[in-house]
Image (cartoon, one colour):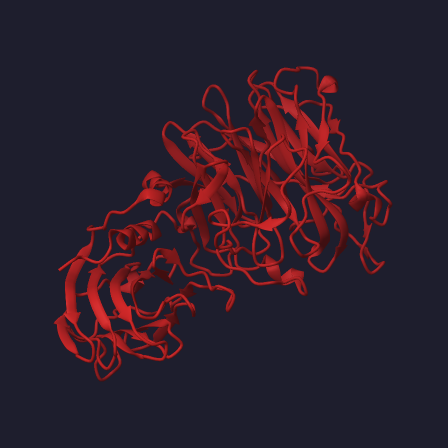
Length: 579
């Protein structure tokens, strides 16, 4: 069966060679106008410029590329589109106006990459993206301390932007990252700002468009601890507040709220699933927030992270798979669901990033890039709905349930149970184990479930001496295992565990008491990959349950498919079936 989460099934967007940040606006006639940064070389090389293309069939086919800025001019990069009520499309981008060929780095040496400096410029199209204005126009950006501290004392501004401008309370806001210096990790210091226009939605003369730089004062939105805070991305809330996310090198994405139209913001903080709750983990990669017509939200991120302040260049890695949370508003804050895998590539080193989110005719789409291929993907609306509904879901999932036993064992006893056949993992199949256990002392290790025979083929679930759950998969040729994070299981209490084996991205996850394990403070990843070469993991049909383990197994349910995280949360809230 085709797994639509696999990016290979997406529809390609035309490009030269390098391609980045494919963002889309929809015209009144329903056409998609996609703008992107492209070039014949790789990222940052000369000839990098901005282009557009048009699709009349939701990404099935595209027009030829149209230059917004030509390849033989100064670098033009990081284009962001805005469509206003008149139908005019604006394209904003970083433009190397002085045509500099190098910039001074932290060490005093010169680097040749010059695509994050110059002026914020725009052109516009009044014919649905078929052509662009001959003239370009500047958006003034107010200097702050970070600009005056750069090697050019603010006479040259370093900056770039990602995503799309948003319309909020009849004004337009656009996020930018001011860069203070260049060094390890390219942009060595940065902080976030927004430019706002209160009249661009109604003003037809480009020269009369008014702009202001936010926040007030001399500093932008910074990281909680380090020097890197960039790619600020924002949405407007129903109460008039603004919410932004941004990337850091500290193992978490940042977040901030503004209650006064962007003039002031809450203190730098890491993003959290709920106010005051668990921190979201994320590397130095795009983490985009979007609001949909139903008033709900999604957050794009990568669900792992470690503190890379000492080695910021390492924080760019591991952008596969893509995870998303579903957000709902409560009392002026966004509450995020536990995350789901939305996109992946078979090659773990592929970096999937810089998305856009398109909503049209009841369908949802995502654009993304791996820097040399950009694609469009239709997203299963049921997946988004599951994330949005997860906050109130207390139903137990029945689809794919192939085995169920309640209270099969008591303390110190072993049980033999006959299990059904599980799907072949090489064919993209998956399965899930849903257990309620009563965990005794922390050191009470032992087997919970074991189907392995003499050759080792089969699956095993065990409690370790560290109080974690370990899953082992063996097809007789190779073996993979992964275990849950330490400290998640409580002693002397009923605990709910879902062990999820997803044969698409080849990933094992643990959802414990309604929360997806993310590695905590102990490790970068809470989810683990298993070998793509593992095939049939069916061992003995007679499985040992609770052999040598001093605890209670209240129930065991087996599904012949992976469960959504949202379903695992619902199973937890449903509770242990009473006897």
